[in-house]
Length: 220
Figure (cartoon, rainbow, N blue to C red):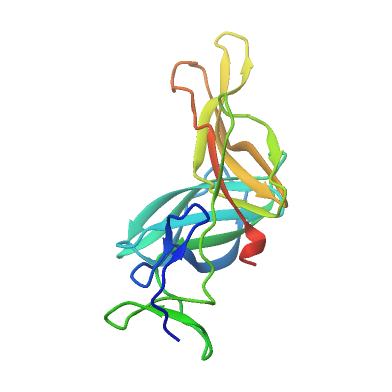
């Protein structure tokens, strides 16, 4: 079924039209990782590099950090940090939610939007991206908050800081790379990789105060 009308947001602005495909859930999968300081894993996604892509994760405990890369003409995840909640060895199970503006394959019966050329741009079985953002001030280690629903977060690295200091000759500085993780409705920022150095000025501390997350219940 084809419709010619636009769908507007509550404030009257355009949200969807027959000529626009929104960001929607395109892939969902679960993978296990060993908490490891030398972790280096690349996951190639099914989203072409020419399309926009956003990825969110949730776990049953522990977390990962990834960078968005491209290879073989597709988006990929370069996962270089993984840790349990208490920093011990163990397995971290991660569910990935991948969003892009590609049209998924509908079932036989589905309402759909087509553009003027007869190309399907959206159908009723697609689940558009609804994203939430929260800003928490301070360097890494900002604690946690409750999203109020089963959530998944963007697990790109969120900061770098000194997490411990041992005085001595020379002193030892323990540095940590941080990322947001989501378990149930709880969203928290914890280290995904820790190393030490005798120089406190080897690296520059930084922190991104914004966390992006979704209601995973809309996509499960």
